[in-house]
Length: 107
Image 1 (cartoon, rainbow, N blue to C red):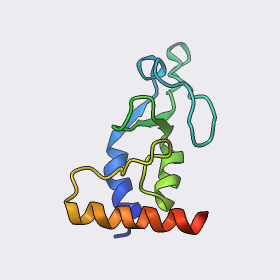
Image 2 (tube, one colour; image 1 turned 90 degrees about the horizontal axis):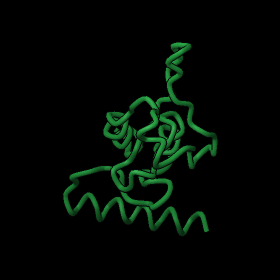
Image 3 (cartoon, rainbow, N blue to C red; image 1 turned 120 degrees about the vertical axis):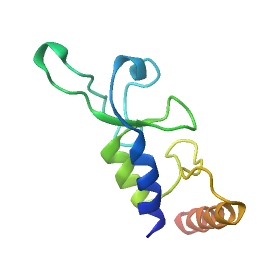
């Protein structure tokens, strides 16, 4: 399994419907820059599916935007923290080396 798929398998478990509790911390996706839509109770319209990352409660993204992101990266789009939790030291060193290599290539 590729690293992107491994990351997504873990991260997608945090998908929730956007609500006003999350909205007090973040109102738009930092990947696509579009405002989140909360549930419209009067019209029975669901809210956007979002993921609030563990690194910071203000790091909230549309689920689809974050899925596309982790196909290419495995770090938070804002702070660059590795998104895979509870990895052994060897795996973290490996992932960090990929991050450094990708940074050098894209510069």
